[in-house]
Length: 119
Image: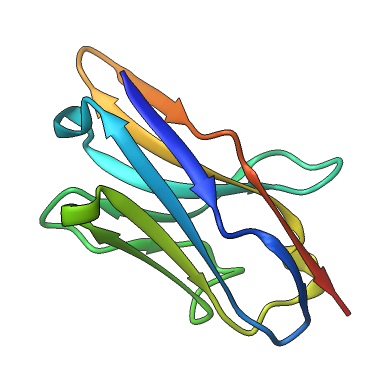
């Protein structure tokens, strides 16, 4: 099992920045990659950034490319999402995700953190 706790959400004006954190505990060694998703009201949850455990490049959705950066601090078992140049359409609940592969993918989720961008 992997336990994830997000923090860092809040209210920010358009053009501002926030940094989300995802503290991980449990069987972290089993995780193959880490990601951030978001879900806006009335919309499906979408993948916006993913960082693999090794040897491949990070993924960003087109909607956040150039503005958001995903990173990891292995010593702190924490994954970050730096969000710059925020827009009203970035308003959503943001979820941290960890994936482990055995015979199939296993997803772990945090509780989510609200990000609200005022225009």
